[in-house]
Image (cartoon, rainbow, N blue to C red; front, side):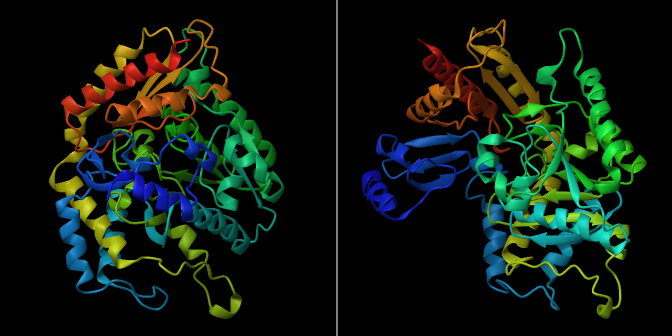
Length: 449
């Protein structure tokens, strides 16, 4: 079977995510036959380097033999069991290990299916905590401009990317939005640290004014991923933790995209030396194999729900596949690789190579910003380098980059005008250089007028 056969079958039955399906009248879908390490291969034998980890989930390459083996062993003993009133060894071990790995004080785990549903858990848990504590007036959440937390109604409500949110506005919770500490907006000569520290002031003003009605602040630590990979300094998180404590408001750290080494440390929150009230994890949790998510929280939160049943204070939230043993086993295998291969230390060499290749974009006449945080690099195209004038989104320059990349063996999926590298950790230095070369050629192709 070749590509065309599967494309035809696909278009007759499938509605793809985050896609204007009419585009596929002229933009062919890429049917993938198999994966191997950083490579994806289609039915015609073309190979694509997965520079974006298949929507940021893949950690250690496609069809990783160690994760494969762990899943095969798990399937022979237990595929799934209800988690209400039952448990299994895999989820207990995974919870124990996550408690040890995450910032101190996050001693309880609550599992779900994916990042968006885990955000819903954290939002509901924060609100319900305050109700159980007698603060029923706390019903609002504070978010950050240009943030993204998922596509379900609650998660979409606390995001701030208009492309995803605007059409659904009548359905959403009302939130209070603070300016972003994103250092793209710093003044000339101002350091990232100084700018991010300065941006805590409007947040403090909001907290001072609205703390009595607010449950929590929700934030993506260090990188606003779907918000064009905008980045900020850890000092903001440090100061935000202090402000939330001062004004008696929870802090939710959404590490769905930035957790598990993406920012250079196992968790982004580590770089600010903070413990949030809720930490949300998914994506890389299973190495990119299966949908699984978890909210870690404190004993204080847990204790607010621990009561006699007739008082109706229990957290009655559930998903059918909560704590699925196969997902948990994939997660344990992923954590084994982190530990056994000393991944965070070894990634420092890859981070250095990513930095080196990113410098090649600095002087490009149509690149207005280059930024990096650990294993994430973002290159922002623009019309005018000096004024930082952006291209009109309707020109779809990023789509041209995507098409060029596919023709030359690299999967790049820009966010608007922002090309980014977020590769699996099994990528080699030579593959990074190849990825960057194709990206540079793609920018040249996309920006020629």
